[in-house]
Image (cartoon, rainbow, N blue to C red; front, side, top):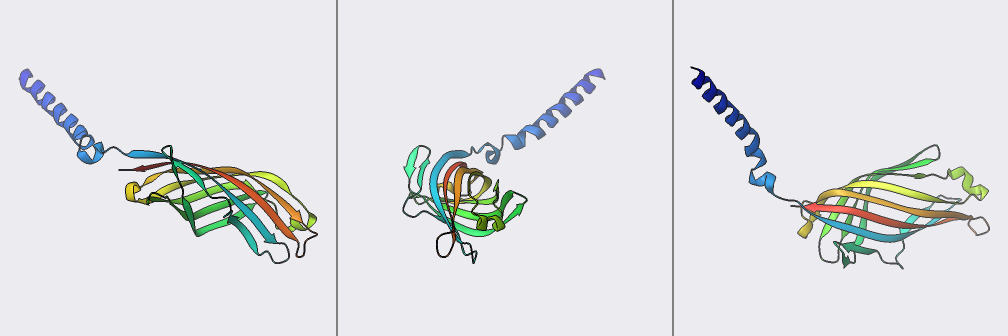
Length: 191
């Protein structure tokens, strides 16, 4: 009788272990993700008409984006698709949402979404007072899609960099100007 109980418990244990291990050793789970290190730098310029509020940040087209994908030079372009919002809470600015697509020169691309960034915010009513300063922008996002060798890409994306803003009240119309130097780091993973 004791032998039957031991056999039954051993069998139950074996079934329990098999139930746990079979999903872990299935081909889908064992498929290794291949992650690529992406690093890039780019510049942006700011031009805003103080009287109308027209203008904003734009990529500096005279200075191309410089990037490495797993240590290999690529010449990317970035497409800002929008969809996000910007708002301020006191002296802190926030960017939320939005999507951008990074097109790499090798024909692959990846999409960044779920963006969140914070940065010191200069209230609009102080521009007329000639306020200026140097600040730091910090943002993170998730890689949500990709094509080519980066098909079905996932991963993490971060951007940080200093920016400087100054006011020219003597110009006609009075303008706000700025320069931004972005450093991007991402881990782009695909199966």
